[in-house]
Image (cartoon, rainbow, N blue to C red; front, side, top):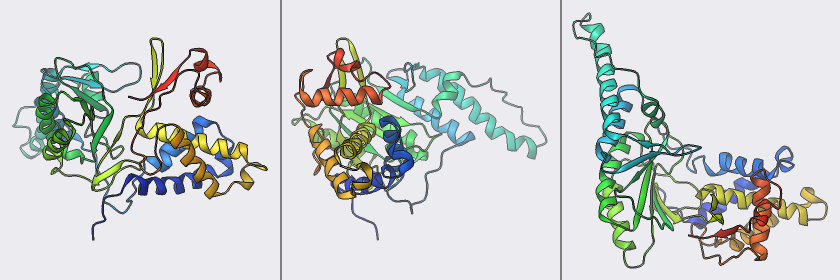
Length: 354
């Protein structure tokens, strides 16, 4: 019997239980804030909440090349595609990549036939894949309307699309993107990777006048594709393998900005809550209980815009550089970021919601 969709509160409870099991281990309890946060992300946020499901399988060889050709055929050069990467997100030339991937798909088709026909079918002999072609197969690909929109996203709707359906999802989403100005852009996990459950994320503005119609259009476009029926914790799952939530806040100062993903922000706050409760408890970790830890996580979440009853949401913060909670966050965030504790406070940085 299929389970019911999980509310964000239900998966948050599962996450806190798992987080206590990870953080309370002595080997990690003495680690840095960054080490704790990263451990939570790897061990409590990313793994499936439904481990009994068949695992997603990344595409390879001809199937992968055909899927990649399908993605870039759907986007064309009319829209802009960027590959998410450290140090800059390169813009990809869709038309060129379609040719590259199709040539390699033809080559993989030729290989077994060449053996069967004793080489009577000519070898397509494709050139080697370009750096962009190689890297795109295992990356997040962001698709933007063209001409580019000024994005003012504060909400995201996401789907756990199976790798073999990613190209179809891109083809279905492109006209939805074009038709709705409140959608900033969308991203997909390339089908050469299986990664996390959020293999398609639509970034948008939750405008009361347009949200219901846009959400319905997105679900209508991709909700019927092959979906793995599970999702990451703290998203609000409205159907199996389909969830939504608020955009995490950003650290802003002058012309600078830093940010964390939906999951990273929640793992950071959970690690911070652990350190806070250990430091506030006489006798340290030995006297901290799972109940006390859970209560501290609730407090920290609430302080920084995440209601424990709806942890998918991001409420208004209304911080400024002098707000006590902002100062507290910036000091911890600086340590997390490998900086001196006063690094961001000296910049008058502010934690700002979208």
